[in-house]
Image 1 (cartoon, rainbow, N blue to C red):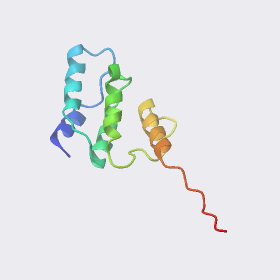
Image 2 (image 1 turned 90 degrees about the vertical axis):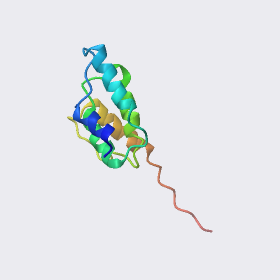
Image 3 (image 1 turned 30 degrees about the horizontal axis):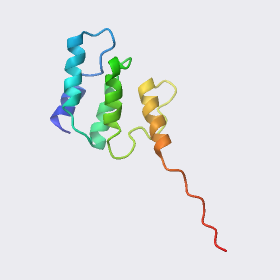
Image 4 (image 1 turned 180 degrees about the vertical axis):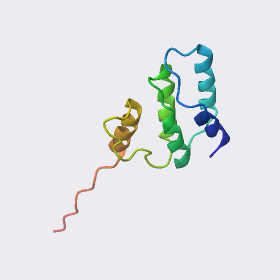
Length: 107
């Protein structure tokens, strides 16, 4: 796992809207330091970094970064107690799956 991902994950979940501007700016800089695409391992670690709200849009940037990983991170339903970000990742992964092809009919 790259050091910039480790640093972001080590600082824990994103702060909420009540955080100071300096704290939010610091987390944005950390997130911006992570180049896409992320590995599957990095994406799984980054999933733990969602906070209680969208952190002035920073959570959306985190979600989009996670989605650069190869394959969906939350392919299985996270359950009814999951937060909105985990449910959203799962829902987006399910919607992104290609529809099954109909069988080919031969005359």
